[in-house]
Image 1 (cartoon, rainbow, N blue to C red):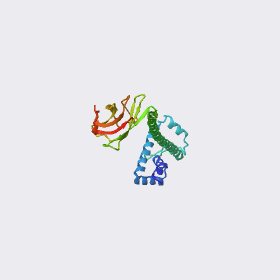
Image 2: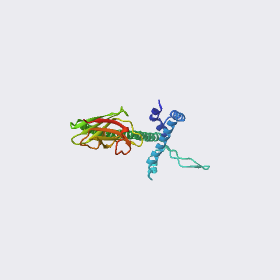
Image 3: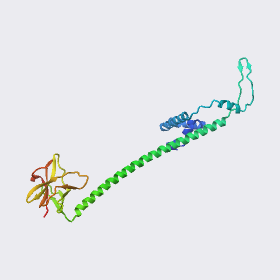
Image 4: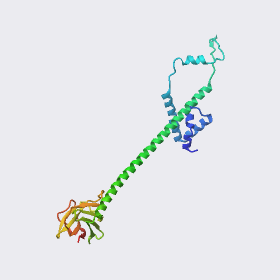
Length: 268
């Protein structure tokens, strides 16, 4: 029998109530001396027995003693006789069976309450775990719902027949770089999707430029790690012959640094 089975067998409760046999008592004391966990459980049970007794103790009525004496069957009625300062006491019948039965009922009641309380605690712990799992599932559902709505919005942009997809390929400085620009010629809105760009160094930030009539025009700063969507909304343009991205000081520049150009793509 393992430790948990032994604890749940009820032997500790019997020991605490004093209704176990001498052999069981010796066994409990031996195991408690060898196992600190079982000893701690026994102490907890003994404390529960004491608390239960204190909680349910009832002061007997004043007439209880007289009623009991009237109902008792005396074996013999012997009046006290003084013999050399010696008094012969009156002997009454003993009722060991009634006492044992009362203790047994009390013990069974206590064990039942203890087991019920343990199951109640276990049920509460399970409910707490289930509530935590429910909260986690709800949060994940909300995140997935937001993500789905974002993907649907992105899909509306890419599937719109009025939107022109402009591929900005990496130049000599960064041939592996790749950015997509989606330009809605009807609403003039410009959206950008970064496929591959080196991480900007400290104090630096990427800036999008629209080439309008041969001149670069600021199209907005690129916000990295945009959690809401893979698309970044930039400045709107009615016309543009190309788009390009340069790495500028954080906050942007009035004119592009051509030596820090990373991608370029024509709209024609």
